[in-house]
Image (tube, rainbow, N blue to C red; front, side, top):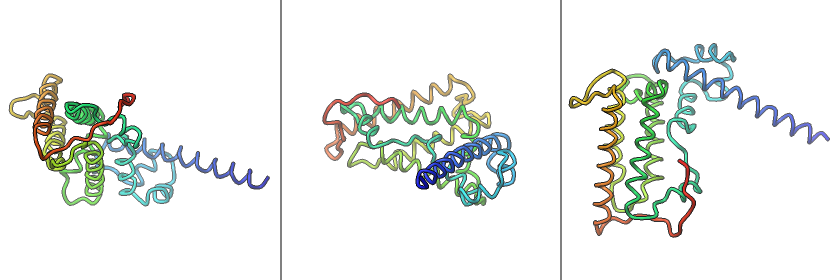
Length: 231
């Protein structure tokens, strides 16, 4: 009987912590949207979430831990299970390009449409700020993980290729928020971004063709047909 009571108590604690964590994350997003990354702080977020700031330190270790948790929780960058990766794995040689350009386009569309995400993305260009440094490092770790999970290629420097493309997309997204143009392309317009996305497709399709024709590169394909993943 006591064991059952203990189990129910533990479950209640877990549910309460999950709800409190969600409130803190939502408050973080609101503060980032309103004030940018430079405006975040434990006191401000605790007040917005209507929780004690002690809980932020207890759950996350402080502001930097909270931001690292936020970046890695799966909202900004997808987290794939092994089963999902098996479903995503290309069936044919030409599928690699589609997997990559779809993921890049979807990820950066999210950054463009969600203000808190865009502000977090700007951490990579903020200097001399420990909060920005922690956030940028967490982003880089997530991007590195994503590149590793979705490469499906051996014998090519997918990290360097991805650094060029993702770095460019990050910079263009930040410029779009600042209402800037690039090579006379209006980054504030859907037409401008359609051109950018078409260019991303062209680059990955060309890289895919080069990989297929290269003797030094091997593509990791599915051995059997699996249900198509919804991602």
